[in-house]
Length: 425
Ligand code: PGA
Ligand code: ZN
Image (cartoon, rainbow, N blue to C red; front, side):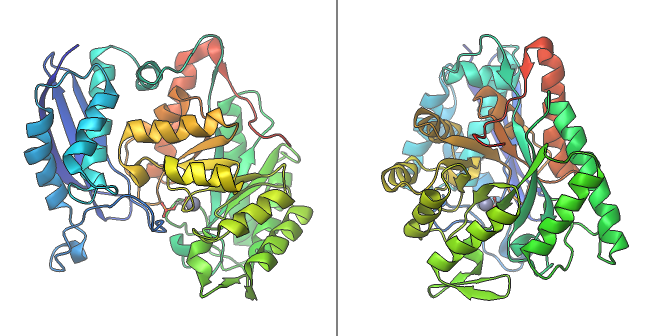
């Protein structure tokens, strides 16, 4: 196995025009890997630290030159000459070099960029696709059929991702009943195009938000869902496409009150409101239904809706300690997986595999600030998560992940499968 010859990094821009870090890794056999790090807007307070320079004269304080310098300096000194045979050893070295729980010395962005770039360089050296190389590194058995992830497509954007006034951050369509990933993608795209026409005809803006979904000024989530149901029916997919939301409830929570859809609700009243929405619409997945430390709110919703996917994002932050707490408290049955919430690929995989071992679903996810990097498409296939959340059907920062999945599906040929991870459909 080759060793690391050099690491370098640079500042690039993400999909919002905010600086982020890109890392290049060169191995002793000439293999090369490059990776770019995403960035959130509705970040959980328990996430690993994203190191930004804070100099108001540069990119309004958001430049990442310190993180770049950390890759070129201390990280390169530590990893230079190390074999890349085992990603866990690389990631452990990074974690030890930083030495903090939240990666605040070197920055989770610096560390993650290196972790991802090494994974890529190894796959090049092994002459394997990244998804296959990741599966081998982390002991995933890939005999027989290989499942492409079911996409949750965020076609109406609200919350912190748009100025639509909609409380819920994401209203998603989920194509559950299709024979292949490409057929599911086609359905999503046709619904997206139909939705555009419906919104336009109703006098709404069809400009898109951060994740490529529309951002109409609807009065509440029921109006948004009604548009989605109409679009699903008009596109000819009645019953085969369900709905999901990411409420991102920490963003509309303050001092014990949830300010949602023009109402002021307690945690218990919010749970009852979700139940009402589930009775009226085919909502099969609810993410961050409650605020990030409202464990009781999550637990009450899970108890009241056993067949619904209850996903923890800000609640769990891709962190095994928080997933273990949620298992004990019965606060969720699925985890959202964001590589930069925890900061290394090995710790990300630990979160996925802990969830899988306990019969939970794991949903690999983008961030609202993305790049052209398609690493997460490979992670979803390599770890066989069965689900991905990577935005709407517009903006290259979103569709590049879908396009990579189309390529993987083609590469797999007869081996490719598309299976619903939902117990209800
Ligand atoms: P973020 O949004 O990347 O802004 O955190 C995505 C999400 O909340 O799932
Ligand atoms: Zn979320």
